[in-house]
Length: 420
Ligand SMILES: C[S@@+](CC[C@H](N)C(=O)[O-])C[C@H]1O[C@@H](n2cnc3c(N)ncnc32)[C@H](O)[C@@H]1O
Image 1 (spheres, protein in one colour):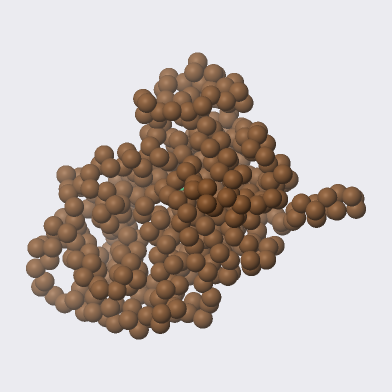
Image 2 (image 1 turned 45 degrees about the vertical axis):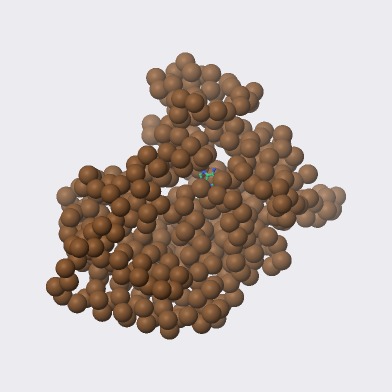
């Protein structure tokens, strides 16, 4: 026993306590200031990250290559820990950057009263009656003009709010107002975000009872309240070291102590279609085809990422499963997707090896998949990829049980690796 303990100590291995299933989803973030600003069902919770970071000193650098809404970075930031991040979706980069670096700037530069003044001005204009708001509609680009994602009067309200926001002089204040607008768009639209974005039923639509200006102002004032609560906290910054986790500059070699992340699962979630209303209204896209450039750079995790010219490396560990799917799947994109998914993961793990210091750790939250009765043991394949890239598995925790579309029990697990 003493020998095992000594070995663990020499590799700086810490046994973390068991993570609760509810912390492995975004659910708990809905009650936590700042974390709750933008609902991101694909995320995990503050407690997930905190239960790992609690075991480390404040001088570590933590990296999340799939940063999403920024749960890892924001948790690290409020614990006084510096973080690096990558995220391919420009909306999510904007959300995470605003939640961390903008809040830090507002607090450090004493801009809370400026924020409140701007809130008062915007709310005064919004609540004044009889404004010819339709003249502002051109501030919304025509990407989805032909779709009925919003009722006409609602889109006019959104346009007027956007017009007021873009005229705010201070960039930090403007970004916080834009985040507030982004975070209410699905709620006031004719769509609903479950696993994907879909049309609301009449009943779901009827639950939209308040006006858009009121919903926006409530959100914006909650954002300001959360910042005021945090005003005495120290915020460490987060640095976006690349947008694409597959492409990292060598200047970051040997700089990272810990990686805490949840990559896209090989389950078809389309992260861009899911956020297209926000990408559109905030001008990250100007036409539907703009989504393609992001899908192509993202980890291939759904059939929508599979184009005819997709490139991937064949891997021995993946072929038995991909071969079965070649025979059983009527949609030939599925075996391609599985091959490309692990080929992408191999690139990501190469970067992990480059970035991490000796005995650096990876906390990797992942789930398995099933297609046409073929179970894809994602954790087993990731273990093999990790090993090929210089890592040893030191712990595995089962976080949650999930179900495939056909009812097969699937698992969400936390894999912990040590850089050898
Ligand atoms: C499961 S979500 C992460 C959620 C995050 N843990 C949170 O709490 O908000 C995975 C993220 O990976 C991003 N992503 C996909 N491909 C990527 C790539 N090649 N590089 C960086 N990010 C990528 C997606 O846009 C998505 O936001």
